[in-house]
Image 1 (cartoon, rainbow, N blue to C red):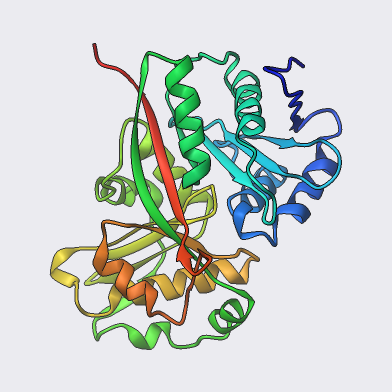
Image 2 (cartoon, rainbow, N blue to C red; image 1 turned 120 degrees about the vertical axis):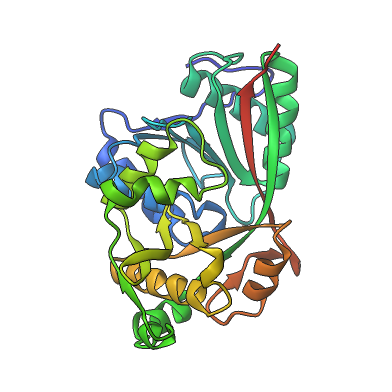
Length: 311
């Protein structure tokens, strides 16, 4: 494997010929660190082939000793690839070292440092900003757009409480009830409510509804609210039709879905856009969620989309 610059940054790629044991170890190493919260569910899904539309490769540096940087590409069948960047808790970001790791990752993941393949980068603000700096120097056919978010997760106590919660049904108003989604019939309806939906997202939405936990609320037989899980593990596309809002249905949907996730061994987490002040305010005060903070300040996560320039 090639190295770049003055630092010999040689990332190890999983899977390889011994991948099953390595990926099991990767789950153990990432499961308890909030910095790597995106990794365990994706790796487990790959090993169990529970979402074959999203094969993954995981890269770590250094190869030996405590892991410092984690990278993952989810090479999605229907939509652009997701790439996750993470730095383990307690390690110091060495910018030159991290730049070399990014170079190595891009060569291994995309085949060339200057690849113009569209993709989505997910990571903490300082890591994504470093990625942006490098990209602006090596790629001229892509442009980026950022979505700034805050992350919320459920700790062990909150997971136990969710598992034992018998109240979600009673939170629904009269005439409303929980039900399963029909992916083939209702997938298009659900996808059309997703504000970020693009080409391929209908197929991705149907796959999520078929293979991963989801929930909907019906009224007179029709779906009026729903939420699902992304193959990266986070809660995704909570939506209540406007005429059914302000009745507590969205909160009930989320409680029911988190209960379902915990029951199958998932650790629920979600991101909320920093521009969505009403949802942020409600989540800040919710006993259901723990806010990811460092030094008593919210950690900013960035979803950074790289798309081909229209010239």
